[in-house]
Length: 181
Image (cartoon, rainbow, N blue to C red; front, side):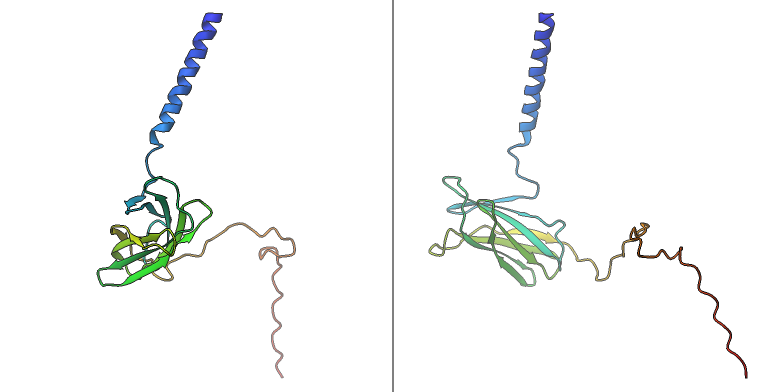
């Protein structure tokens, strides 16, 4: 019985080790849609939290900033995200620090659909020079037409006993005919 038990323990340990190895295979990949940029002093990662990115809707961006040499997150920094399209329309907004170390959020509302050239500027504090990432292009889809929505339909009846169900209300008596003189 001890040989059988030893084989079972070895087999279980092998399965656990294989599972851990498989789980760690994807650990180094960035999240889908995340872009990585490097400036003189920073490594900046940016991703859109709003998908799909449509015109005339607020698009939220998540930006993480780390020191290029030490890899430590930069908190208390200042920056902005901005974009320009082919017609030279420009949108920009400042980065707001979040509770997560080295993570900032911002939102932009694009006025038209199409390709937009985007970039980020960032600095450690107000005494430093803003460092700009290289430009990237972002495809902004057309907005939904105004009023292009449907009211949700529900079949659930109100459970409040003070509200009368229309089927439970007795019909009103017919109106009396007016008297003729």
